Image: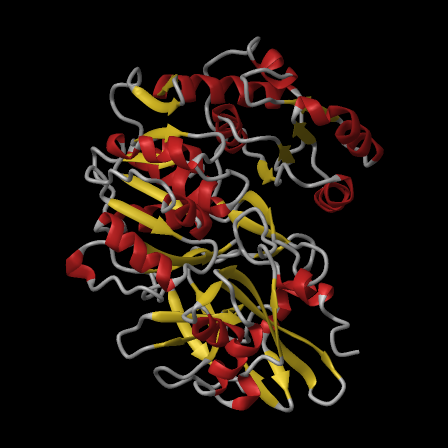
Length: 499
């Protein structure tokens, strides 16, 4: 079944009711149906080969979401790209994916079209966040009736390029079956209800905003309150009109700075895409009475684990990302591949209908990332307790080996973040002539932190080999678009510290 057909089945009977309220601009369910049909018909008119990639490098808009639905309907492959990407980054994606169509913001048409045409792309259109662009000009001429192209569960629906923290980004191939199975699982596990209203303030070039949030609302026939850009005051003002909110930790930190947080109408707050500090989790509970639900997923796997939503499913525990979702296999393995005991730290491995088939045009890399018995190696390090709750410790590539001892950055960060004067912390390993790697902490201030005093305090709490040799205070930590701290950049910045 084409994924669009499954999402369309969730639309309410009254297609003239509001599907999306985009800051005053109202889109009905019929608008989504007709708009995506016209765009799908335009794609068909271009006579693209079956399964062509459609690369989308635009700002967030409802029209961009409708374009995504149109690509699914037309049986092609959606390739969302962060609009912040510059020429050198975009060149890699276009060269690697060889899209048949590129859609970009009008302000970038000059350089994007030149880059695309040089790489053999036949069609480049514009789409802006104010309902203008050459793509819409063409599509408005088309019929608003369209029969979705049949697709099998294993057929490719989207390619998501990973963040590329170690070398060039890789294109994770997600099928119609991957996306639908995960959406259906989350609809049940997160207890989506007929009267739910989703407050959508996430970008839609990423799993969280495009697949988790948008799919959830579409599949459930739930209205969305739509923000093209996150503004804490504006978002907070709509809490009385919504029931579900999904955000990255940075959004919760900013919302906590608002004087008024009326969350009485809200049912569920979800956080993901980056670790949520336990302090933020506790402060949100104190301010609003709500326990944020943390979950865990990846571009390659969609959602894997989640804290329970319904009380009968278990306790919602801060600092963990919950047990495996129904249908998802989760195990923790030692370096030698043997299973870990409860609470033993090891490598997180997963399998299930949500797990991708592999990386685009990289069969050797794909084979490396799966175990002999078919489990995907996430690259994350964590532990599972006796009740099945997963706590993430960090990325395996972030592991620091100092003097022959393994140091997990997240453990040190947990201690640091509890100390006075520390806002947030990022622990990294940098080259050291004696130890191979030295532990270094980069922190943001919450007051007047004394680096030497912090080191002394840590020495009284944790083993000496884990204590940072230096604590560096910076105004803010570098982050990517989804709020993840860019440790690779920090390692590069401080590589010569002990040279």
